[in-house]
Length: 77
Image (cartoon, rainbow, N blue to C red; front, top):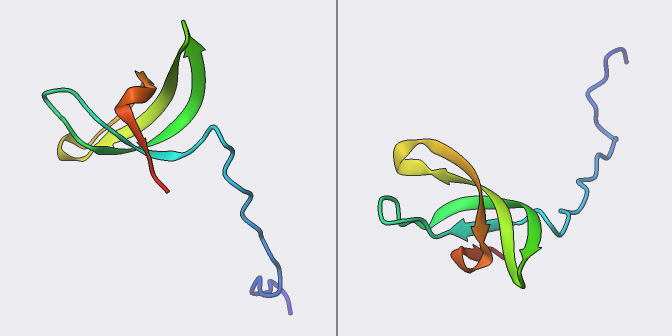
């Protein structure tokens, strides 16, 4: 059949790379959160871990991307 419906073809979803995980982000006094986020990258600095995180402040409809201390993150799942 021309065009086809796409049935019968598997498109497996690759596993999530270990560096990219969903998390909760604790914010500052203006927006304490928790905010839903995703870790994009990890980096160790002076013996402490930091994550590049993209997170959403839903009340303000703002997407933020910044390096945060691992202490401000809670892993989901």
